[in-house]
Image 1 (cartoon, rainbow, N blue to C red):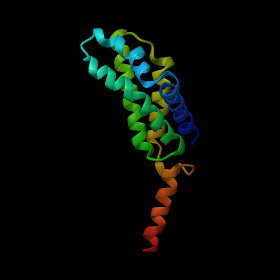
Image 2 (image 1 turned 90 degrees about the vertical axis):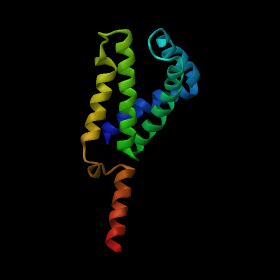
Image 3 (image 1 turned 60 degrees about the vertical axis):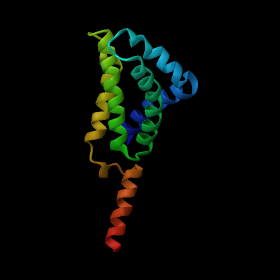
Length: 137
């Protein structure tokens, strides 16, 4: 639960800041448009740059409450892969130990844990309820 809460908060708070303070368009402009001098089409930079804040916000919230956790983790893993690709595109020897690696380690740790062991999640409660309904049938 603590690992799930920590990772969820990291992404949720980043997404909240990007959506409600910085703004998705400014996020794309500031962090993605600098890659317009690469082979990446500008439309893809806008699309991904505007979308990522919402993915972080929504998937982070889902991880915090433990609902559809695996799907949320896959989404956040995709965000980490995109961030990694972008950093490597501009700086092939980028140091990932401060940003990407801790998040990825937490994500993989949570992903490998059996979902049925996370008793403080909505996924657990739903699975328990479903099992109870199946027994009653």
